[in-house]
Image (cartoon, one colour):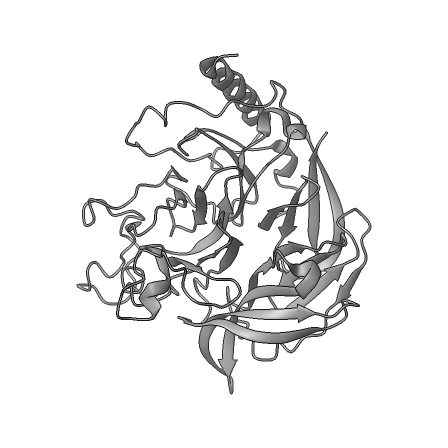
Length: 409
């Protein structure tokens, strides 16, 4: 099958999937901003099958509260971070899993608004070290201090977790707005962390601040990656910066088999974004308008190409509304048929799942909304692909939140 024929197959399949959603008019699938076209960007990734499967959504467990991230353990158990400063251990990734609380000293977590215990990664060598790292807001004597990455060691019996080290401190904090904070292991083993601007106007463009950025660091030592774009900067924080000019990154995903890193980012009342990350580049968010405006002016463009002509345009935007896009992950495996390789984006306000089909260069070829999530589960936050190839998603409605397992029918 030729590349063009393959593209027509997957585009038709996804168009059919979108047409079956019965989504109301206000739930648009957004728009693809104009991109600089290259020969590579016009060549779509061929699908592994011409069939687009329906989705089977099963409840793995309930009784959670704002499940923020998901980590899979080598023995089949699952860790879930919960925003109100709790860590849950699920007995398996299958429906009917039992939930137990992991005892850990989280008394310093500042739980307010969007802040609390947030993103998490399980270390690749967990089977030997039992280590995992979380993103969390930090308070001292009741006063918020910063957002930090903390590495923990889970006990052999899974009942307790001991704090091993503060991997990185000094991410800006506010009363809870735009706290970020999503860590994901990059294609080279370095830790990529998407952060928020904490609703402070000048932070995103300030390369000496860790807010409104993607950061890149060594997962074991906490030191900035040695080939970071600003590694020779005099300011120690700037050495961690991989990209800047972001508003509030909630999702970070590595495309399987490539070095492409995609982020999902909250817009204000318009233009949530999906971005392809390019080292050292500016993504154009600047509510301070070059320091000329005080406060937090959210009327500026998400990617201000007039102020920053060299800023990187988004690969996808939500348009005149906001979905409050959240986590990002990729479907990976032949069992997904024509959906294999699709980028999954969850939505909080939109209460839906978006499936983005990408070209080899990372441009968005089509967007679909699977009907299985429409108006069924409320706000959706975490999304991770499990070792079994299934898609796992958490709800974040605040009461009896769930971990869902999604597989092709």
